[in-house]
Image (cartoon, rainbow, N blue to C red; front, side, top):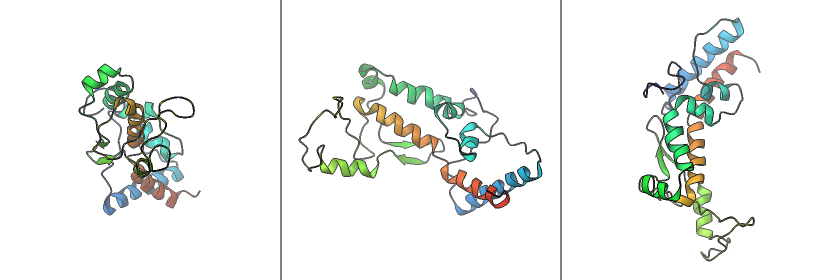
Length: 191
C-alpha cells in the first residue's frame, strides 16, 4: 500500500520475503532479541507492524483482511476479481495472463503447483493411471483438476483453487523471516 499511496499500513514495517540470506535472517533474529528485551524491560519500542506480521508472531492466524491491509491492490483486483469473475469476464481479462507460477510482492517467484498435484495427474482421476474416470466428485460437483506444471494456464474451473493457493502463498511468504524474529524473541523472553 505504501507504493500505491493508498490503503492502510503505509507507515508500517513489512518483512521482505526475499530476505533469506544467512545475514538477513541473523539481522531479523537480532531485531527479535531487541523486541524481546523491550518486552522484558517494559520499554516501549516504536515499531509499527501490520497485522500480517504481528498476528503470526503472537500465534494468531493472518487472513485475507490482514493481507488487504498491506496489499489492497492484490486482494481487490486479483483475489476478488478472479474469484468473482463470470466465465466471459475471466476469459476476456485473465485467461491469457494467469499461470500457476506467480511473483510475490518482492519479486520472488513462487510455484502454486504442489507435488501431490503432479502425482495425482500421473495416477489419473480414479487412481489407476488411466485418464478415463469420473468427472464428478462424491457430492456431484465437478472435480477440478489441479495443475501439473507452473506454466499451465489457469482455467475458469480452476480459478477458486488458484485464488486459494495465491492467497496462502502471500499470507505465508514471510514465514522464514517470522521464524527468525520468533527465535530472537525466544532467546530473551522465556516460554
